[in-house]
Image 1 (cartoon, rainbow, N blue to C red):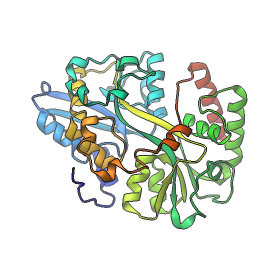
Image 2: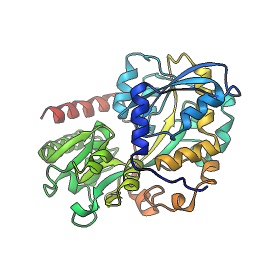
Image 3: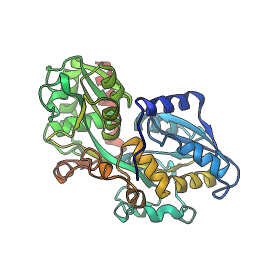
Image 4: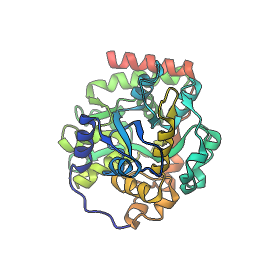
Length: 355
């Protein structure tokens, strides 16, 4: 696959405009009957022309809305689905939504492009047999940084959690669980070790560091880096890679203590009204060329083996997209800890935000 020429700000410019008008596009008649589908996705997380092409090919209109993090997604749907047909939760939130009976099973017979998915992704502990979710993208969480403003590579979570060296120039994510988990990693603990003592210690650490934090950013740490408002940002690897494409002074590192390995998924929530069209859109997103175009645009690792076969060597060999073994060995996959511990995490986060 030949990489297309890149234009600075193209991703955010396109997607921000799309969100503002509530993107209305249309899908191919080969996939489903006419109608619509309401798609709720992360910011900067789709190809430049994916939705428009799907609409054109299928005749299905797409209402495309954006959320900033898993907490916002869960909160929007937990009281009842306001009308979404397709959502993109991360692996541990798939577990959380299943625990809360918020997802519908998928009909694999209506998604033939499942055959394109790498078999390694087809049986996950959080969703055995992929009954309720299919993989969209995967990656890491680490630190994006402005090279000219830091002293060497900031390869430790200490720069975000315990140091005042970059006071006022730090952005953390707004996702409560993730921020607490990276605190646990800095403490040398498993990010899934939610003992009362660990929750209290992480809370105390973040509260103490809070005066040095410029923002708890809702999936826009890369924008704060690009604007020069912060020099360090906890972020998804692909978001920082997008920023690196626009500014050579931006770098990305997974700290030596390890980080988070995550997988974002395609799910149909309970209460969806356009289930057939949601399956049609999922199948379209799992097409080899469509998947390659999305991956080339958003800079995340695709679990779509057929799409990978179309990608350039620059993409396949980029360690910030496909992390080296040393990074995957020190990092962990988040596991849903259950409703009681989730409540304790949220209570701690409420105190942190109020402190």
